[in-house]
Amino acid sequence: MIRKCLITKAILLSALVWTCVLARPAATPAQQAQDQAKPTYTIPEYNAFQAANAEKDPQARLKLLDDFVAKFPNSTLNPYVYQLYIKTYTDLKNYPKVIEYADKVIALGDKVDAAGKLQALQARCQVFPYAYNAKAPDATEQLNKERDAALQGGKLLADFPKPAGSTMTDEQFAEQKKPVLAFFQNSAGFACLQLKDYPCAINAFKAVLALTPTDAVASYRLGVAYLEMKPPRALDGFWALARAINLKIPDSDKIKDYLRRQILAYEQPGCDSLADAQLNELLQLAANSPERPATYTIPSADDLNKIRTSSNILTVLADLKSAGDKAKMTWLALCGAEFPEVVGKLIDITPGTDFVDLKLYTGATPEEIQAATTANLDVKVVGQPEAARLEKDQGVRFSGTLVGYDPEPNFMLHWDKAKVNPEDIPTEKGGAKKPVHKPATKKN
Image 1 (cartoon, rainbow, N blue to C red):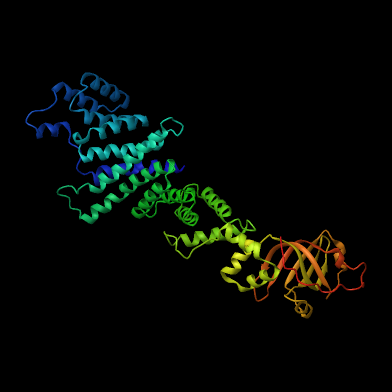
Image 2: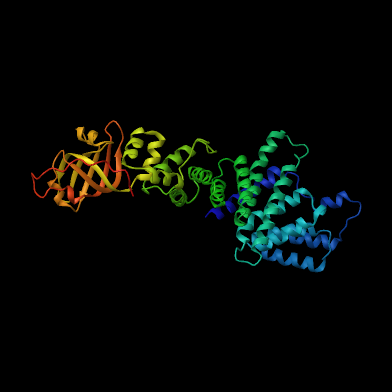
């Protein structure tokens, strides 16, 4: 789909190339005759060329062109014949032949003026994504030639002078060139991307976006180039992909899913669902800024692993209560984490059919825990109905999965799939209460 988008854009640009920028067309044989005292071709050559040029049916025109080349292999009209071959093979959708004759025009050097070369280069780049065969033995050579042709076209167009007698200002003429310059840069970027020359591709697509900031395909390909680098420039890649989605690129749902998977792979958060909020935030921010602000970051897997290896229940409480970026990173790292032994005082208990819900308080010291009257832990004990025998104010040790938290002012950590240490469960209701234990300091 992305390749088709580039082709469609190239076809739409062809009219702009012919009418807006190349307002000074290549000389025709008749004009050449006026400019020279003596024609450099014979009347039969001229008549044969005109017959081919007037033919509307592309198959019949192709036969006339082949006959011309067979009869007049060294004709001075060959530059015009090759250009007509380009048109004919484009009509017939024989794209490798379009490229072959475009290259013949370009190889003529000074025998073709800048307008003629630009037309050939534009036609070549326009059809290349359809002609390119990634499995061909010369695939790399194809891509190198395409990149060079696109860069040559961009340079020729940048240097192309404003037509004599034009009423446009220099600024207006430069503005007219921009879409076509972007087209050549897009073509170069496509070739560089296939060559895995990612710095080249990044330079090309950034040039496209400088000329045409709303080019969704260029933004998508820029993002892919950033992410494919070794090492990847992940944050810049995420931003460029988000821009492409905001610019309504075709298959945006698939690209959005691709971006989400890239964020997950880069960050590896404790809960995959957290990537959804980050993705939505990224899309909102990128909608208003073509360039990623230096202040925008997403923590890497290494960043989160450092938090995981240095955390315990007390640091988790402190970090999440602090709010801001610290709380956000801590939760990215520890959502879904398994804690092997957390100590708390039972504030309330609610037996249920499938689970027992415990409200506990934990703190830094046994004295703090013992003095607590409100809970900061909500613990769902599953598959352990005997936990219902626990009694208020007793000390409880449990293991469980951290699944959520409520921020201040009603701070609460939520746990699921918890198991109470069997030693802490009274043998019968009204049995001796267990003491409050020392807080745990380690987690899985």
